[in-house]
Length: 341
Ligand code: KG4
Ligand code: ZN
Image (cartoon, rainbow, N blue to C red; front, side):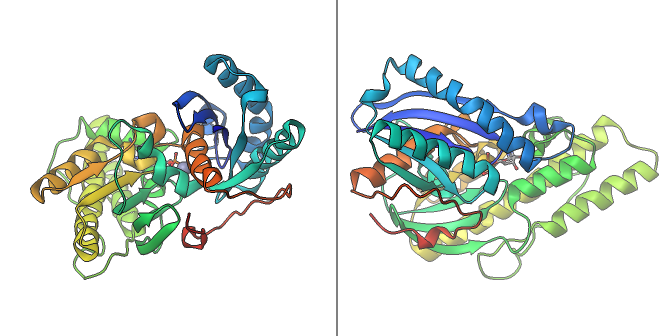
């Protein structure tokens, strides 16, 4: 089955062609980062308008790259939520219009299920069941995954998502949007031990997260440094490192607890923050110590992309799921509401 995948939930237009027999044939992405940078974050209306501009040229591009023609496509998968409603509607209407014109089915995919399944596109994919840590700009969740659509939420953030905390911490130090990669870059030059931030909610049992206090600690430290006359690049690097270490250690502690609670030794990390090298190596060490395995996607499939949507959609379409021509998206959408395959 050849599936065209469309992703437009936020500030990236992603398009891909995935074939159930041959694997990923082509994928293309247009990132709107430069468009939103001047505003320090995503402007929803600008995002929607840009998705409209980019979608059809990107679809033509992946068809060319894969050497395919539209008549070969069996179905279209698009992100139906969660995300920015206007942005989601661009992908949904485009998918339903093309599906109608080509006489093929379209299926709305859950964005976080897309992230969760992205490591399946790699050479050594994880087997079910496993524990997944979903860490993106909008979500921080620990999920027990027994199969596609068999999700049990084990814990989540009470306030900011991990990626959001990276972005806000970067912004207050005058760094560019998105802040995650910026903080990671500065952290490489940071001096360890100059600052130490709290590991929120690790001193009590449970699998919930809270990152807003950590962000405030970083803000106070930065303001203190500036008022003491040090607004140097090195001060930023030292704070970036301390902040990243606090996030990474907190996520590692909670992943270890979740694996123990679920009685599992397989961990999948997905979403934009799973591209973070310090997080990957910390989790690799933890899983190595417990003789388990950690799985993640290549960096470009950790952040938003069309390939994960094409893959997730293909699995559901192969299982016979389909939907009507209605154009319907959901800004909020708990993943546990998804039907099992
Ligand atoms: O999954 P994603 O592309 O979009 C959402 O679904 O939210 O995740 C974007 C988030 C942003 O907050 C970004 O700062 C963060 O992922 N991010 C990173 C890194 N790369 C992206 N955070 C830490 N380290 C990175 N290398
Ligand atoms: Zn995402």
